[in-house]
Length: 640
Image 1 (cartoon, rainbow, N blue to C red):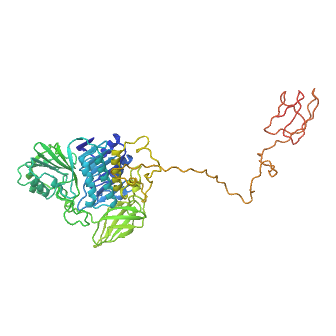
Image 2: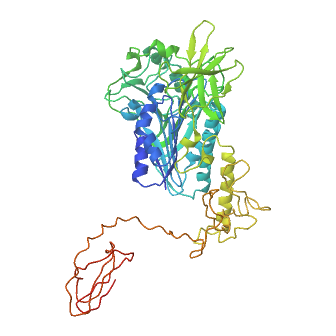
Image 3: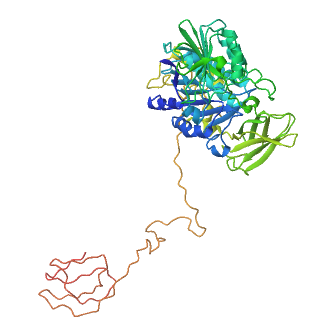
C-alpha cells in the first residue's frame, strides 16, 4: 500500500511513534537532513526512539548553523552519525527518511530539527508512506538525489558512502515492488542541484498565484521573476507582520503596476514556518512546498559550484521541495487583505543582508586505523590550519592541538587515538593576527553507530557497500524467478556442506559478506549460494591435567595391601577418647557360671547390647579391644 499525504504531519517525531505503534517491525535507517540541526534536542526526542527500534541514526546539517555547544552534545559520533555539509550558500533541505525491511516513510517539509520548528511552529510536511514492499515514484527520485548529492555538496567520504548506500536501498525497494495503487494527490520531487527550482514552475499564464515564506527577498527580485514567468491574473502574498522577514519597498517594486496584487496579513498565534508557492489553472490547484524561501538563492539559482572552497559570488542554497497536483488551497483565506501599495515597514536586519558562510569548516573526523583523519570543507586561502581535540567534551580550557593541516591540503591524518564521540575543531591564524575557529565535529565510530544487531559491514564507510548491495539485488531477483520460497529444509533446499559452491565465512578483506555465484554462473540466471556450516571435527577426549609431581615423591603409588603400603593409611579421623573408668566391684553372682570380663571401655560411636537389655555394670580391665563382652542374665552376651 502506498499513501501520499500532503502537509499532513507537524513533525517527523510522530512518524517514529506511528512506526512503533503500528508494529512495522525493526527500523533499519533513520536519516535527518536540515539546515539548523539542534543536536541536544534530537538526542532528547528522536535519537533514543529510533535507536530503540534498531535503526542507525544519521543527522546532516549546514556547517554554518549549529545552535548547540559541544559540551551539550552527548552520544554524537559514538551513538549516531553526525556531520555537516558545505556549499556555496546554505545547505537547507529538510528531509526525514525511515526505512525498514518492507516499509518506508519519506517526509519532506519546511522545518529544521529545532525545538521551536518541530515543536510549536506551523511547518507542514509532505509524507509518502509505503508498506508491504510497495513503492512510490518519489522514492526513485529521492534515490537519484541522494546519489548525486555528494558530487554537488562538500561532505566527508564516509557520509558520501552512507547516502549512496541509502540510495541503493531505495532503488532496491522500488525495483522489487509489486504494482500498487497510490492513495492521495500526485506528488513529485524537485531540487536545485543542477537547475534552479523556478524552472520547474509553469512558464505560462495562470489564473491565481499565492505565495508565502518566512523569508522574502528584500530586493523583491525573486517576486518579480515569478510574476514575469507565470503572468498571474491575481497575486496574493501572505505575511506575518512581526515574524516574517520582508522589506516593503522591495515588495512594492516587484508588484508595481499589477492591478490585482495584494497582501494578506496572517494571524500570529503561531509562527508559520512553511514555504509555499501555489497556483491555480482553472479549478485545479498546484503547489510547491518544502525548504526554499522566496529568495533568489533558494529558487532562482542552482547549487552549481557548491564544492568551492571560497565564499565569493552570489549564494546558491541546496534546497529540496515537493510539487503536488490537484490539491486544496493551502494559504488561509482569513486575515485582513490590503493592496501592495499600502504595505509599509521592514523587518530585515543588517545581519540578514551581510550573512556569509563561515570561513573555516571542519566537515568531520574519524579514526582510520591508528590515525585520526580530519576533513576540511572550507578554509582561508594560503593559511595553515591546526586541528585541536578536547579531552573534556568541548569544555573551555580542554582543547589541545594534535597537528596541522598544510595550506595545500584539505585532509589531515594524525597519530592520535581518542575516545569515540570526542569533540574536535579546527583553528586558523589569519593574516591580520586574529583567529577563526570552526564548529566542533565529533569523532565517528562506525561500530557504535551501526544498526542494532548489525555488523560493521553495513556501516557507512565500509568499502564496496553499494556494490555488495547490487550483487545481493541481482541474486535475489534471480532466485525469485527460479527458486521457491524458503521451506523447512532451507531457503534453497538441502545442500551438502562440502559442495563446491558453498560460501566461505570470510573473504580476503576480512569483512563478512555473501559469496558471489558459483563458477560459471551468471548473476542474472543462477541462484545464489546458500551459506552452510562446516562439518564439526571429531573431538578427542581431553587429557586431565595433573599438577607437577614433587621431586621427592615416589615414581608410582604402591598397590593396596602390598608390603609397601603404609600401615597408617588411610589416616583415621582424630578423636578424643574418654578417660578410662575406675575399676569397681563386680556384679553379684547370678545363676550362670561366673565369667571374667576383660575388656576396654566402649569407643564413641559403638553400641553394646544384650539379649535381655542393657548390660549391668561390670568390673573391667583396660585392653586393646574396641568392644566389650559382658555377662547377661541369660548367661550369654552379644557384641555389636
